[in-house]
Length: 510
Image (cartoon, rainbow, N blue to C red; front, top):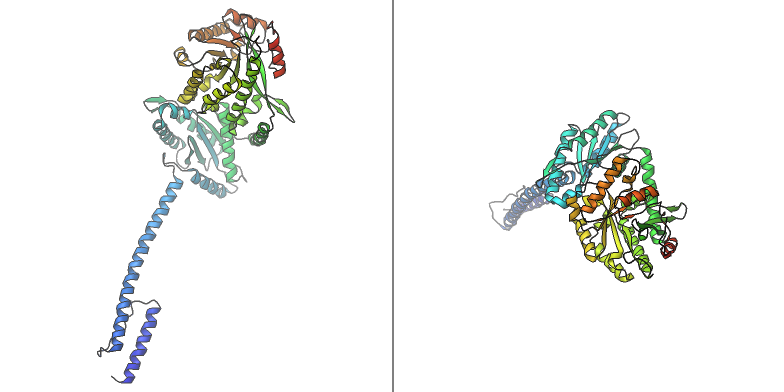
């Protein structure tokens, strides 16, 4: 070959390298018959191009596979995010997304409505029958709600035992009919853990209106649902502006209540509990008050609901225990006080679910030198019936300390004598509502007598609250009710006034 041929071949080699470097790995450089040094370089470049092309094609396959895996993972993530794993219903995040879409899509036309439902006493099912039974109940609830809602509605499980139904295109009457149908669907018993369980729910409905934002629709339905829960079992409420105002007030009240705890604005008043047989003071009931800087002295009915919603119940319960036990210690330094004198302290269901309650009480008793039998813990009949094993264990722990247990508001629940006998209680307090008509209605007197007989048959002492006149006190004494309290004897008193009353050796109150 001539030098001119070599120049041409070198030019072709350079051109081929430029093509390869541009990314066209399929290009191959021609090899001459000469098999000289230029051909050796050309052959090497061709081999490198083949190897690079093979690697590139393999990389493309891998990228495609990884992309497919990534898309599948994204799809699975969307499914997990949008689906409740236990029930298969929509999740909270999907509900929020669909509510926003429904509100945006409605424009000025028919607005979407939202129904929120929270099962009544579901915790009792979990605590008594176990979580597997609770899960079975939730799955069956999901099936029933889906069937009752019908097609075209999104049903979601928001958390725990809370469900939602988005009604996208119905008039007000139809929305309310749907809500009622959802509630009715739960009432046929569900067999879980070998037990037939009857369900009800607190239901809140937010009807749509033009201009309402999606977050407001969800917020207002939630407010209505929580208000329904406060009203009692199996309650349905439609949201109103007054509910929102009340919710705002509760937010302010909670902030003020936190300040009250920090600034020592809470105080206790004490109402004497009388021995109806002797007329002497047998004990006192500690009743919490809030000395509000602007509103004056507030009773517990005005702020304990807000405390419960804010998670302050246990903190307040501990405050009451500390102060009531300390005051009992101061009173017990008076040698003239009856040996069996006791201070009665009300505790909430939240207090009773606190695992450290008994050790906490034990520490306070030791700190203030109070014998356990001088303290009586009042627990409502409803809290006991619904509390499950945790409450029963707490009651037993307190009883083991020597603290007396009293069943409060007795006669408003469904306790049987066989159940009463299993409780570590010393007394039962008859609810004041049962005293209405005691001295004027023969049937009511017979009913109260039966309640007292039930209490005594279970080996418990009886206390009647809400005694308003001498006739009621005398009749209760005739019916063998041992103890009583009420405005006939005394209103709740500040500490100083109660201390003065206890110092009167004649024990007379009324």
